[in-house]
Image (cartoon, rainbow, N blue to C red; front, side):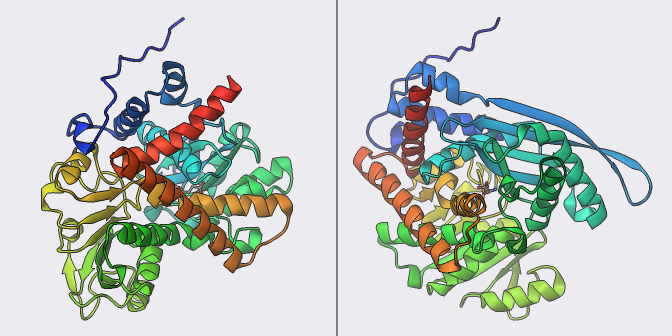
Length: 434
Ligand code: GLU
């Protein structure tokens, strides 16, 4: 029998940001998640037994998914579902389709979901799934077959009160519809088995825009708290997928100038601010934001270093590292993506007085409305859009206030404050169960 041990923690930091341990420049996503957890656990003097329970996932599934491709060949894909913790409720988290997905990344994202659901106080635990594939190079038929194959393979780990998937990078409402349909073949009509479904199939109004709306609410609150006027703020957003594009639209509605946005092909910049509706029109007709008339093309790298007040990385993890952190000029960084800032870059930012709103707070709007969708499915009673947006607003502002309070009271970074708020809830539920 092997016994898990935990290395003795350095003295718990008290006081300001300077006492967070120095971070190594090259960490993989799981090491990053562990680092962030450990810093908060040390600060809170979280007891050894709780740390033991929370450091590693509860269950990890790795499955093979054979798919007959359109050209007749058989391809083998690998899928993952990592269930990190469920002391506060069923496992909850998205499914990511991307060619760089691996177990390590999914593991780290599953842990982030545990902290995220606790932070916004929805009765879920944390999980994440993924398939190593390039969905941009697959036909609808191939994607459907891949998704149904995955749903069959992880079926035994799913359940309305066990584990509820949702969309993430590279997946969408259609993918959720296929999972629901596949699950239904065996278990009967079960809309609450996934969230982020098409509204027509039991999805919630407002779920599609929920993560972006949450980013807008948190950006607004952070600007207010740090004495920045959102109406005059210059904002750059890396990523124009579901999260980035909704955030751009909703933040520009507050009066801010979105001076740059980007997608995988590159970015665009306009000194006077972009007309976001026109960016959507251009994107819909050309398939990308680049080369939009009246704007200047910038690379994704250049976008991160523009002279702006607020930078919103809304693409993939690891966007700001030791390589480019010194070139970032924003005063506030809002992590709309998961893990876009490495611990090394995080520390650099703090030493320069740049504030970072952590992912587990900034992008928690998605899972919050997933909770509303699940509730509506279970009660078979649909909410109107105003109710969804109102409830989202209440929960996001409450979470922001709790994190900001702790940040101010304990003079700790926002990320550590967010972890501390979340960890306290998960730890309490663990103590009550064990
Ligand atoms: N994939 C989203 C996230 O990372 C949403 C998860 C969910 O709604 O369950 O937060």
